[in-house]
Structures are given as structure tokens and as C-alpha cells.
Image (tube, rainbow, N blue to C red; front, side, top):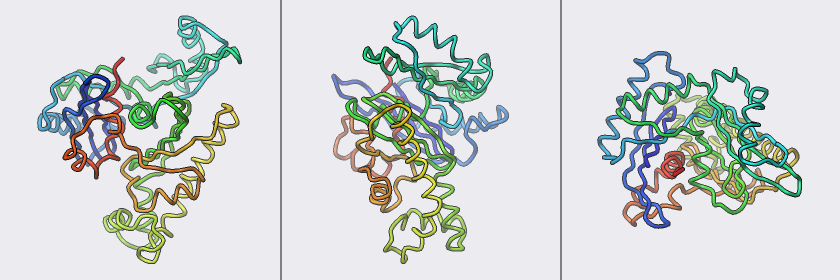
Amino acid sequence: MVGIDIGTKSIKVIELARSGEAWVLKASGAVGFVGISPDKATDEKELQAISDVLAKMVKQIGISSKEVNLSLPESSVFTRVIKFPLLSDEEVSAAVKWEAEQYVPIPINEAVVEYMILEKNDKTNSTSVLLMAAPKAVVEKYVKVMRLADLTPVFAETELTATARALASNDGIFLILDLGSSATDMSIVKNGMLVFTRSIPVAGDAFTRAVAQGLNINLGQAEGYKKTYGLSSTQLEGKVKAALDPVFSLVVDEVKKAIHFYQTEEKGELPSSILITGGASTMPDIVPYLTEKLGIETIFGNPFAKVSLDPETVKAMAPYLSLYSTAVGLAMREE
């Protein structure tokens, strides 16, 4: 299957194939995109511009299938874990239809609603269900982009759902932190299943603005300084870190709130590790910084950990691993 992830600054495409129990990479590509994402588009001309970039890249990398899975931005999707008594799968389906209206913050006839059964617990006589709802208008824009690029959309899901499939193992509790350009998305994954999500509008662009203001330099220079010096306390006398600290502390505080909510409201366990991904996750010293601030081991998520790659491809892809998590997860979706 082919996975397509359209972000606010780039488009990523991955094609995977099954080989026994392993995945094999068939095609990959990423291209910078200066424009607007489909959810922000106001007319077909803007959607066509995105589609043209996508179609050109798809042709260049030579994907073999026209059928694709695509991601929806976390900020546009409502996600919530709801609990029911212990029910059969058929009863859950009926219950979600009845209950969705009170949980979804937009008119139900204007939403695309999906759900996933997370757990059936005989001890507590309960069923946990992950409810997801997206505005039909947003979904239709992403579908339109695919069709304009002569592609056939098969399935759409949230960025974090796909990212979790690529990064998290099926055993244990992990917190995934996806640091993009316009938003930081976080999720808690238990035994391979998404059990909590949150998105905040503080990410790479905000980090760049903080550096620009703190060092009184333009945004172009600030972007370079952010990528070169990051959260290092020794490089450039720690000036970049000092500029980043106030805004980055907002992200740290939100992560703490997410963990606290999961532990208190959902009676969940503390995540064993934090997996970071996304374009802004490559800043120098971000791993020790988060490990210290959160008190949880933080590591870079490897979206190709479940994919068989030859040594040359591993070397070539290494600098771009943080970009591909969502696209890889989309390509892994089989059902």
C-alpha cells in the first residue's frame, strides 16, 4: 500500500510491500511545499496546486499502485476515549451511533465518524472505545487532492494513528511526541493501541520565532540557528537554548498534563519511554533535554524499524527519518 502524508511544509510518500512477516520499502519521496495544507484551502485552485506537486513526485519516485491511504491533520480531528458496559462488537457499533452526537463538537451529519475498540475488560465489566470524528468538508478536500493527482484514496486516518503504527511496539506503554512545523501532536499508545491524543499549536515555527526574537535576527537566520544549536547549553554560549526555553516549556507542560490525565482519569500506567518524531525533533540536545524535564527516557522514533532496508538505503534515509513516520504508518495499514 501507499501512504501519503501532506503536512504544512512538505509532502511525504511511502510505498511498502509485504515479504513474509516483514515490510519491504518499494518507493519513497519527500518534497518541500510552500503553500497551504488542504484543510486550509478555500477553492479548487489551491487544491490543484497541492495536487500538482504530489502528482509530480509520485511520478518521479515510481509508485506501482494508484490506491493510497492518507492522513488527516490532528488539529482537524476530534478524538476521545469513551467507555461502555461490556458489549459485543455489534452492540458497540450501535452504541457509538447513539452516543456519538453528544461527544462530537460539530453536527453529526457534517462529520465522518469512525471508532476503534481498544479494550474489553471482564474485571470492570467495561468496553473502551476510541471515537474519531472529522468534518466531512475537510475529508473531502484531502480526497479531492488525491483524485486530482489521479490517485484512488482507500482510507483516511489521523496522523497520530498512523504514526503509532510505525513507531510503537505492540507491547508496553509509550508516549509519542510529533513535533511538526505548526503543531505538536502527542499520543499515548498502549500495546499498540492509541488510548490518548492531544494537539497544541506550538511547534517548529514557534521555536523559530522565539529564536528570532531572542537573538534579534531574521526568521531565515533563526531557522538555521535552531537547527544548528538547538537546546545545547554550550553552543553559542547557550543563547539559542535560552531563547527556546520559554516556548519549549509550554510543550513540556502539555506533555506533563497529558500523562497526568491518563494516569488519573484513565487509571493508566506511566509511559516507559517517549518517542519523538517530526521535523522539529532533530534539534541538537532535544533528547537529553526532554529526558531531564520529563523524567522519562526519550529516544528518536525510527519509522523504518519494522521495515527491511539494505545498508545503503539506511544510510541515505538516516537524515530524513523524522519526516516519514506518518507516511510509513499509513502504508502499513492492511485492514
